[in-house]
Amino acid sequence: MVANANEEVAVGDAEFVSGPELILRSLASGPDRQALVTADGAAVSAGAFAAATYRLAHELIARGAARGTTVTLLTGNTPEALGARYAAGLAGARVVTLYDGMSAPVLADITASVDTTVLLVDAERYAEAARLLPLLDVPTVLTLGPGPDPGPGGTALGEDVIAASAHRPAEAPGVPITPGDDLGIRHTGGTTGIPKGILSLHGPYLRVFDAPIGSGSADAPPRLLVATPLAHLAGILADLALRRGGTVVLQRSFDPGAVLEAVERERITDFWVLPPLLHQLLDHPAVGRTDLSSLRQILYGGSAASPVRIREALKVFGPVMTGIYGMSEAQLVSVFTPQEHERLGPGGPVPVGRPVPGVEVAVRSLDGTDLPTGAEGEIHLRSDTVMAGYWKRPDLTAAVLRDGWLNTGDVGHLDEDGYLHLSDRVKDLIIVVGGHVYPSEVEDLLLTHPAVARCAVFGVRDEQEAEHVHVAVVPAPGQRPRLDELRAFVTAHKGRIYAPEVLHLVEEIPLTPVGKPDKKRLRRAATG
Image (cartoon, rainbow, N blue to C red; front, side):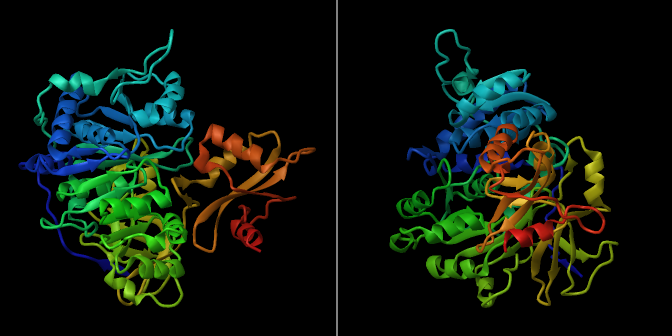
């Protein structure tokens, strides 16, 4: 079956205005309004933020940022991180953000693979930069603010580019940007040693600003709480909020108590959570005594949602829940609105909504045949927002992009009312808080451990639909590996998000009839 939402938004080359420039123009048009609140509670006006960003863009151009180059960010949830992303875009450079939770060697490989010209580091990740820089060969490394004291005989991380930009003009640099220019590269898991880079372009990204997510109007601009990394969806939502005249309230990381406090203190209207984080909010003792009346939209998605907990969230937070389904390869695919949550029954999965305007969804069999309503199959989609391809991997691009259609790797069906339901993934992928884990990456690494003879990594969902990384291990002769040593080994080589949470010692890895590890059987054994 095919579902098509036919609303076109033309993006032409004439008088093209990029997303970063649209955001900066909105900020400059209301210079006195509050644009940002830092994690330490300091307010930043729209005018001051816009001026600093324009100056930084000019300085980055002077340091080599230009069309065809890459500016890579090692940053946290800071105004400097947002400003750097916009400034690099204004300069015409593609932007890459190095995710938290990955090991220094993996981050170094990513930095090299994207041809980094300038690396920018903010105060939230100075300590990480000290471990990363010895592994890099980058032409220019700069700090977004005063760098840490290197100590006697030490070496500074880099020059303070914000201080250096103080004499630059507080106006747009005027670099011509076209819809087909590179906007950035976002990374996801892969089986090639480093995560796959997903190339996005300026033109398709403009559709984000018309997406039916995020609240706000001229009379009631949004106040968005960012408690998850700006490097992921929270950064896109920040773009929307600032473009719509709103305020972005930053937190360094997700803490359920701090989120609830911020909602009440800052009169938050919008925020985004993965379902496991939503569960933490619902279970926090302060939720019942927190003033939640300012909330207009809580966006959730990224992993399976428990119908029981979503119904509970509707009771606690009110009719503000909005489910979304999307991916870096295609941006937003579908939305399940607050009004549509009324269709939730006492059980069964939560649909991920109807395709948004401009997105065509097809459910197909393995041979590519379109399937009827209600039939389970692979989900394919077509839209103007589909990625340009995987960075420097035409083979991987060709495997998922055919005749304009993207094979998402997800399995599901469309019901009689046009709602999309997800049930599984074709791709062997575990979605955890903080990112995606491809089991083969962890398996390949664990097989280098002297105590591991064979292994299989798989995801197990708990009663609240949160996924956890499990590993079944056949020990090497005379060995009995422990969970803590395997966790430390994986964390050191790949990063903490990849580390297994549960270890199963087995005599053999069960296999399917075609000789592949039988991970369904392993999951059944793990869940009793």
